[in-house]
Structure formats: structure tokens, C-alpha cells
Image (cartoon, rainbow, N blue to C red; front, side):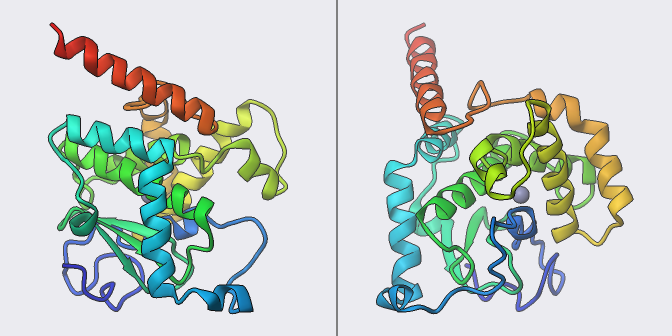
Length: 246
Ligand SMILES: [Zn+2]
């Protein structure tokens, strides 16, 4: 199972076929620059060991993005088991989480996930990778465009680039800004897990951008907030019901 995160930084450690066990950290640099987790009185009320599983549990039970993705995984024959497929670990650097394709496990970086909202976004982001892994033969290591495609989808559909998040980053923009944000974050996520140049990462993202940006499965739309995500979930359930009645 998930031992220590390779002891390593980014990328496959010790020949381990890691996908991107650390991943979205770079890709999810959060609003104000924390850098290091805070060790205040409030956070000391929860030991990390408790708070990560507790936040995960709440996310799995209540987050509409996550509930949709869990349904979609099940529907695709990749039912997710919370004990088997999630692992709270201490990670190096400022990464927030990762998806390990070799074990189909989502790693949650308990030292870097700061609150419930952040947990929800990390789980969503990584579940999108898990969904892509389930439905397609993704060559995470040998084809950088496959990785780029999944990073584009994860950035676009997870809420990583929602307006509120962007406002927090003080990068206010218009409609087109979503796409710019998705591009930027996909490139950062690739750079976080692959030893390639920024130019190579950008090229890979550019080559697949339109196709992958337009692939909104299983949401069917870009869920800009929780309400959209709830609608998307309802639509997904109806779609499921419709097909199962044929
Ligand atoms: Zn990612």
C-alpha cells in the first residue's frame, strides 16, 4: 500500500511506477502564501492524524463534486473504497495530493491540506485523474499528452479555477480567464511531476487543450460552484436511470 511517499520529491521514486504521487501541490498553490502549515492553537486541537481522515470522511459524504465522481467511478466499474483507495500521508514540499496509478490510490498530503474546502478540491482533482485512469488506457509516463489531458480536465472541472479561488489569488478576469487559469495550472501540475522543461509542458498542453477542455465527463458541464455540481450530479443520476431502463 502506500508506504512513505517514495521518500522522494516529485516524480517516480526508485523506479516505482508512480503516476504523480505528489501532484497538485504546485498546481494548487493557494491564495495567501502559507508555505508551511500553521501550528496554531486551533490546529493543535486536532492532531493531523485525526483531522485528515475526518475531513476526508466529510468530503466523501457531502461534497457534490466528489459524490458525482464516486457515482461515475462505480458506474464505470471502478468502485472506490475509502479504506483502500485513500491514504493520508506526510508529503514533501507544498504538494497537496496525488494519484498513484500503480495502486489506484489517492494520496492526501495531511501536512499541506489546510481545511475542509481545500480537502474537497484536492479529492475532486485526484478523483478526476482516477476517473480518467478507469475509463481510458492512460499512458501517464510514456505519453506526456495523456498526462496533460487529465491535468487540463482536473484543473477545469475540480473548481481549482473557480472564480472565488481566482479572486483569492487576486487575479480577477473575465470569462476567458477560466481557460487561462486551466492552462497555467495544467502546466504547473505537469512540471510538478515530470522532469520536463516549461516549454515542453506548455507544448503538450497546447496540443490537446481544445479536445480535453471540451471533454467534461462525467460532469457534462463546468461545475463552477457547488450548485452547478449538484445539478450535474442530478443530471448524471438521471442519465444513469434512463440508460438502465432501456
Ligand atoms: Zn493533477
